[in-house]
Image (tube, rainbow, N blue to C red; front, side, top):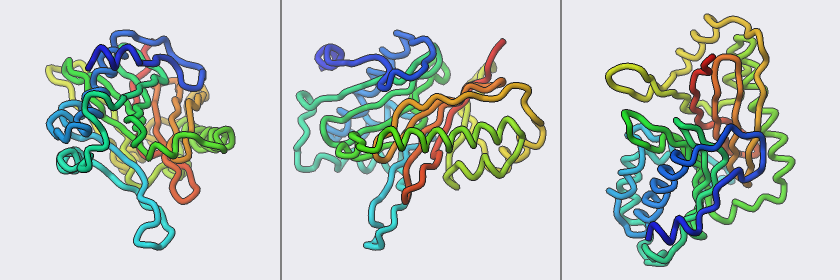
Length: 271
């Protein structure tokens, strides 16, 4: 199964945007995770699914036409929900655990993280961000959608809108201003990083209060951030911020015609 999957793997930027140097070991590790994650759903094996994700996974999508109101709402699938979903998904056996395909395209990867798109046959897609914690690779952030939403006839326009949103967010951090940062984020967005260097590593989530305090304390950055937008489906976008103090990867969702950051992950910039 694994060899068949790896033979079909497409590695490299989906969009050809400016990228950090790709890391083959990271991509191999996260490719295996992606394969296990998807095939866990195909096999209705929730333990396979959960073996790939962090206990605080942020997996977010959109529920269309909520209660017939034509309003879209955010759907959150934490590990507890995935445990239930993993046992009932594919109830009609339309997806064969062996022959159904798993596609993986990397936006970019480093020695400590990878940003990718998983395509689960022709059922759904996930934009995943994975990193290693205490020596183990796990997925920590995800934004997803139905397979029919991948092809985007308004891709260029949506990428420009994403650039505006992420640039406004980045400019707020550069200026130490809370309002533009929060304006770009979904109210329950997950911003996090891994605390490294101690005996044990852990995922640190940041509340809105923590973000506000950090912005007040940091002041104005000496160097303006730059933004790279990787891709936009009809519902999901991915981008990177290169700031003076950090590199931050953001996933966005288009909710009621508005792009918002739903989760992000950052690492300090060394040197």
